[in-house]
Image (tube, rainbow over all chains, first blue to last red; front, side, top):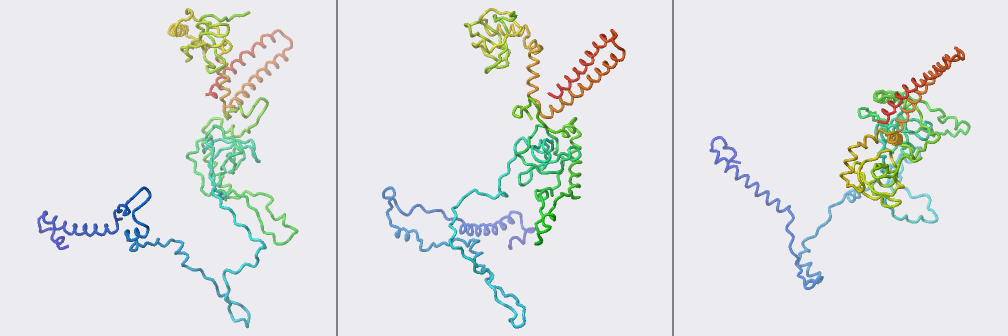
Amino acid sequence: MAGEKKPSEKAPGKKKTSEKKPAEQKAGQKEGGEKKKRVRKHHASRNPVLARGIGRYSRSAMYARKALYKRKYTAPETKIEKKKKEKPRATITKPVGGDKNGGSRVVKIRKMPRYYPTEDVPRKLLSHGKKPFSQHKRRLRASITPGTVLILLTGRHRGKRVVFLKQLDTGLLLVTGPLAINRVPLRRAHQKFVIATSTKVDISGVKIPKHLTDAYFKKKRLRKPKHQEGEIFDTEKEKYEITEQRKTDQKAVDSQVLAQIKKVPQLRGYLRSTFCLSNGVYPHKLVF
Amino acid sequence: VFKRFVEIGRVAFISFGPHAGKLVAIVDVIDQNRALVDGPCSGVRRQAMPFKCMQLTDFVLKFPHSARQKCVRLAWEKENINEKWAATRWAKKIEAREKKAKMTDFDRYKVMKAKKMRNRIIKHEMKKLQKMASKKGKKPEKLEKSEKPAKPAKAKKSEKVQKAQKVQK
């Protein structure tokens, strides 16, 4: 440190040496510290081999030779153990109303079960790989890419040709015949019930709003019967009403898609038409 | 009765088997059922081939029997068989069939629209002629005018063929 304080006056050669010393000291300290941290080289086996599988010394002799009495390791405290230390609260005091009741009671948080079954349920065998639906692997046929024209086979819009936008998280396909062309709104379609044609629309520049997810499209059901048996069936949604949000989303997506469709000649008319089979037309012989 | 004969140099079209769809020249006859055959310009090695899988074409080449491949190739190229074949109706039909099988859904739609348009035009012309004919009564002019539909029909046909070719491309 003293050497560092005289840089300008002294010659550059000396400066270097003075700087080197503290650097060396530091290096020395570093090595010592590193040695302590670094794993020591493993010793060769302290148990000479007499014949294959047979050593010269017994277990207890080896214990002494390896000095295991000095080396006792414990595993680092795992997260589970850490969590276990934090014991949860067993009781809680709750205020109680009434004049002569003493104001509060000490109540158990986790109470004993109020019913024990006659026969205990047997322990289930372990299984592996049984995942819930949300964790399933979603696949998509190679023939279906964003912008492909699909033919819907089931549902209200069967036979209609429709543009594929993207696959949603549950694996269903987000699809829009642009509404102006064939009255198919932004809708979900199932991959299995769809024929993928080889006609593609260039959708690379189309931005699909991020809030169009499965939750957005899920059917809503009212389930709050107020214990009146007279009108339960009427209160449930009979007629589906198109919300304003759906309309705006439809416009936003369709305007972009329509622009791309107009670039391809006759594609608009193609999307307007429906698919049908007639005499002599066999699906297994058709090239889609 | 028979116009095409099995002879040395006859060009044949292979209808089935591993070389289906290719042209070969008959170089020699082995026995009642087989011929020595060679297709240097169509990728068929010199080999024996049963007559059953061959269909004779109109083309005959000039080379002696058992001529080697070089001679066959020379004769083939001199006669320009490949181009002549492509110009025949037979080859064109085969090509049209292939194209039809490859049509995608969108192509089928386009063809349907083209056909519809063509038929409308034809019908329109026919109706016009019929009207004229019925108006003017049973005059000999009828014969002249019945020839006319051939022309507009052909004109529309060529349009349709062009459109169909566009579609198939």
